[in-house]
Length: 259
Image (cartoon, rainbow, N blue to C red; front, side, top):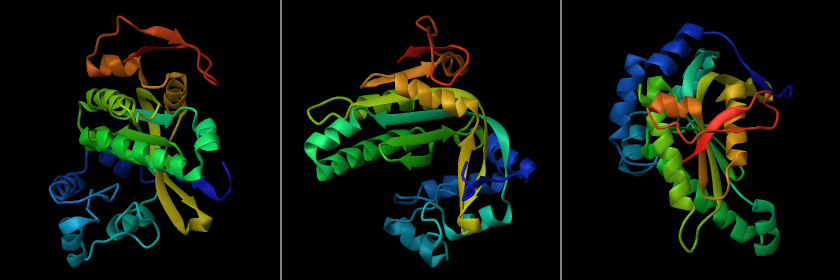
């Protein structure tokens, strides 16, 4: 990890409460804000930035942070005041477009951009409709998590449903975008990271389970979602069709099944 992007520690009990159990105050805000239109929203408290809901939030003094547009000014202040994180079991999803380089080479940059945006729009909708929490966009890849404190005790079931929806919504039809999806459940470290000597602070996830999810997504064919045995069992889904996958950088085979 570069020196300009550093994982932070501390405030473990608070972060454990928020992401593993659900902080009462934050949960109440998320529920209330979720009833207000419209996207995009704060990644932490769910406050809307667009539509009438965004107008109402601005009237209340809550708006996009000037330092990080993914958070409202209040939640950006929280990340500054309580940097750190905790180890939490949660569901994780990676989804990315197949053959992006060859497509961009043949179709041109504008078509490539339109293709990525169509994918991100459809995937974001599928994830948020299933109570997922968007962690990051990396070019043609989207990363999402379902922390129990945000998504409830049935987070694994919701993540599996989202994986199916992402593959279905962007992988069929005349304008289909070939997407591979990986979904997994395990313990990760979720917490703040800082960059530019503390001028930018965000939330990220770390650990081997994150790498497992990314590698499952890489194994998935276009229009396919692959789910690990651990998330299928957690979600109460059938595991009869699981097989062993050799994943790059992972020492032991991982049992998973195509959805």
